[in-house]
Length: 199
Image (cartoon, rainbow, N blue to C red; front, side, top):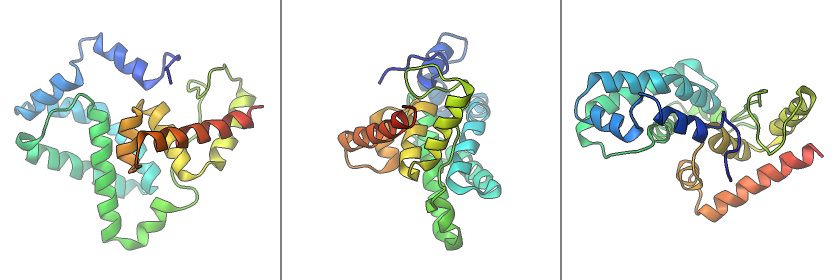
């Protein structure tokens, strides 16, 4: 699927590359080589998105903040052993998800927060469009009602693709799906449900 809208994450990333901000691969290499400025820039640029993502997984502010701080502590400690990446956000999302699931195992009473019926909730704003048409306020409300009815897995895949701009391969890895084909099928089912809601 293309990204026809100017606020889609893939379009935003392309705009950022045209500014003075270094590419992800350059910034990551600077960090791996010991640059504290690069580390701070990565933290400041990605913290809000990681917090928003962690809250969707846990609905627990303290647990999410602890998870993010643990991720960045580990990164700093292990930076010389890290491999290259050209997509820092994807790498951090993966680390945070793994970290929060490990915390879940330690505090088993939090399990329902990861797998409950209301897991991975989000709403569409006026600036965010999931399908190729402009939506007025009433249609956005209608679409948000439909999003609320999606299964957590379908909400999750919509979030990764449209909010984070991840590729099918990255989504497959993050969600633990067995193939790109399975990933696409899940996406098509989610979008099909949302399109029906707008008919």
